[in-house]
Length: 90
Image (cartoon, rainbow, N blue to C red):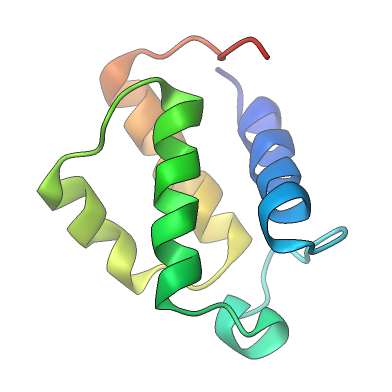
């Protein structure tokens, strides 16, 4: 899975689930899009679907400090690497 595929999917999730068109990669999600803890839980569920596996408690804990789309992509890229995930076909 490439970084480009991850970025595309994360942007698709934001468009589909949070109605955010063309989210900026480095803005604070809480400030720019009123992203809250419920949104974060939804996002983690979407990431699990994308990766095709459930996140561990520790992996979810690591997500707590994420504030930007770029950080989300870094996080997913790291998870995908540890799992050796192929892109999920839709």
